[in-house]
Image: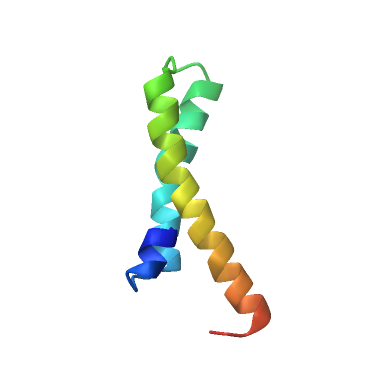
Length: 68
């Protein structure tokens, strides 16, 4: 996320929500025992979902402090 900001790129709220979808889908499928998780799958979905969650946090913070 810091690299994106340094390059002048912004992560909008729509893309941030899309990035959290693999995280949510993987967690839901694991919860209902439809798939077995591996460390690689957890790492990849967690990394992608983490970027999405950080983007959502930045959006909320901007809304709260009124920068938008």
